[in-house]
Image 1 (tube, rainbow, N blue to C red):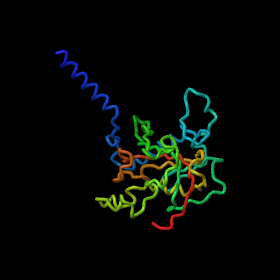
Image 2: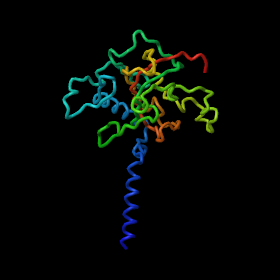
Image 3: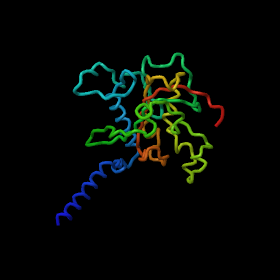
Image 4: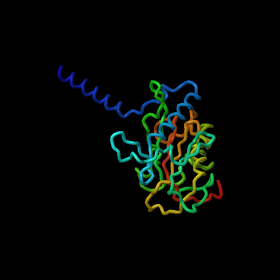
Length: 248
């Protein structure tokens, strides 16, 4: 009898441990009307910009309610920023831009240092805000690898890329299946440095892409092992170098 009890207890503990590792299914409480989700995104982005600032290297940090050390920091909403027609917002960090720098074209090859997080905006009893942030695996170059990433596919993918050529669905044969339109659009508002990969980073800005300027509720490439449905994206970055691309 004791053995049976122990087996049941062990199984219960195992199940509980496994459940802790599960990613929450954010589609359970999604509003039926996508316009409502778009409104949630805009409210959550505004709240995010009021609750975070940039540290001395340009990393996004949340204001502390107990530490007075960040009391004099400017909110993201107080930094120079602009909202594009798509709803994407780009924030320029003062005194952290290349001089003169080089313009970034929509097809340029780039080397970019960044942290990329993705969030779902939810309405919790009238409080609209981003839920738990999840990293875009393999693209958080500061915290994971410490070196710039070259041409992330959500920024640019060639039409003869292996993923497209070997795709088995019509959706996966389209560039929009991989690319985050709002990110590409906003990145062109910045200029690139001419830095070696080994140089220390000093992040130049932030791009916040609402879900409607990302994948919304469309099918998309599996970048991180969890769905990007209704997900907004926050990119904290520095473009180390760009090279004009002569062909597609």
